[in-house]
Length: 448
Ligand SMILES: *Cc1c(COP(=O)(O)O)cnc(C)c1O
Image (cartoon, rainbow, N blue to C red; front, side, top):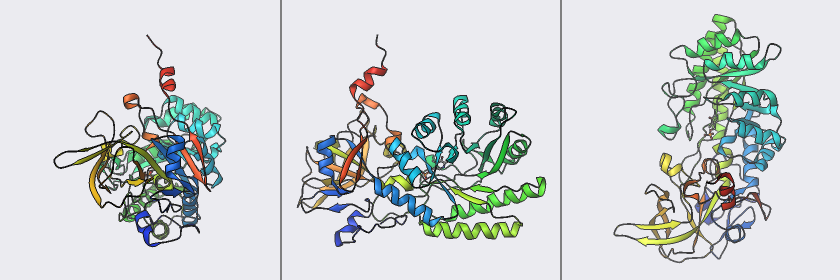
């Protein structure tokens, strides 16, 4: 069980469930070597929808939303839509009472046109287009997070003389945290936010306060992603309250909100660490009230923005094995997709633990490299996977923890077509997003 998880009543802990620690709580092994999730056999899903296919356990998503609301009862929890968004997901997030954090017109319009309340949406982005800002203002988003000095005047002008928009400022607290260099965003020298160290943050805040069209609600920071330790968050609280104290001394400014972003780490393979949410909530609350008391400030309302930890462990990718090739030192098990449905191994060296489903094998596990079908040597699904030694063409493989940054990062490489997304719940599977067809690809192509 990942530590962010509150087991549901059905999650009986059995002797074999150690193997299932990174799977949805509903995952159950059957005697014939299959696995059911949300009460539906994964092999049956592969038969019905074809492979490759993404599977999402709806109750796992909902349980994770509830775990957050339970751990942070006084905070506002915004789901970071970039981890995975479709209309059904927006609906679940709405029903579970979370807000939404978006960073493009596409994410924003998809959510609002499906009925998500715009006042519970926050718009982010280090480079918002004029269209992003216009759409956000037209639809009436709750907050816009200012990420660069040039945005201040642009946004104030777009709001117009009679309007008023609630904003936050993305501050770089100067803290290094996160699972990989490419997903660290709290350090001084990267593209996001405004630094405290060089004074850009303070300067921007003074300018925002001067704009009657902008209502500064608070400070925002996002340290990075896949952070498994609470310490960087506590350091961020101290830096942010330090800045709030200086703003109070210099401008008499009291900011009612503090957004600590997301980045909560999850386990991708059994034995890996995940961020403990209960500990995070308790330690952040204490650190925040202590730091505010020391600075003589009222405690701001906390906002957090988890993405990966809400949806990552709820998703699974199913592949069909197309070939098994044994070279001198390696066994390459090639499946029917790869870097176009999941670029994370190529981008960050992310590591996964696929397993055989749909048949029972008595063979001992062997170390294999699961690769994709794309035309790049770096097209790897899982670098050192353990699969039964008799793995062969036609077998089904399931990759757990595929719910975050897979669908949303999928590409059109090799015109393989992006896989469908099926949701499972209470023994029923239904299609949320259909497979991208050749007709979809051809219809965008304007021809000769
Ligand atoms: C990506 C992002 C998040 C969510 O990050 P996770 O690692 O998925 O929790 C939250 N806030 C902002 C501003 C982000 O850019």
